Length: 310
Image (cartoon, rainbow, N blue to C red; front, side, top):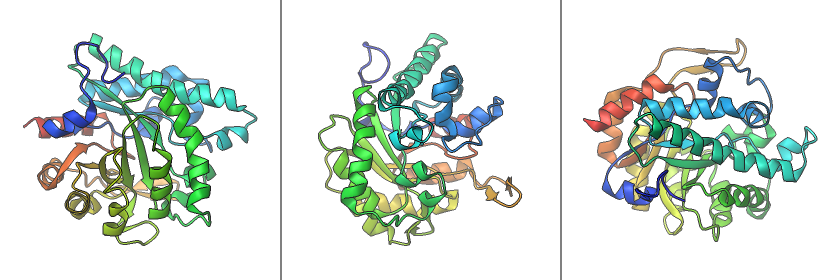
């Protein structure tokens, strides 16, 4: 199933060829703003088991704000992570499917309320470090081989693909080796994917040159877009043009707000540097999937949608 209605089965890749598509913003900050405590190793994935209706409501808020793509709550949902809570594999597979159906339900509700479709669902595939819940997704270099990382990712990706998302979001990838593992794991699933690195300046979080990292996806047929997410807005400016040049693919860009997390104070500091002017620049440089990650809420996505509509 693609899109949300049989009358308009437009594939996301086709939409990218025709123009720019708006992604949603940070799921966790939207859930927190609704009063949910996410101080947990499973992060937003915990609510799939405990409050799935809250996840649907969060997706709906972004669709109503102008997003055309919802990224599911499966970023930190893994067989291994849930196993630490005593949750069996069958139940985890059910929760992974639920992450997709929750976003589908939000899309259906949005269309009932007058939002123009098609609307798409991107199943989030977070990095290995997200399962560890120790911040290592922002460092990479886990000491695992590409084959070991592929074996970790493939079962979860199979479960998500079976739920029928429009695309797999291979996101917040910290290094090129994990990207290679994800790109191997996506083969044969029958679902397209985008690949987005988390970066610092002109390098991956593991310190690799971005040009080399982007090149890993250049010849992978399943990949419909390559880019960056969960980084500072200013890091996107050069990355978009580089990704477009290296891969020849549409570019995906969804950075954080620009605020900085202070782990000692356990609070966000500074102001947002995510502006409509930057969004327009990203589109001009080749970005075709544009949205936000941490601390980017529905109001900002509404501004993004207006900027891109103009």
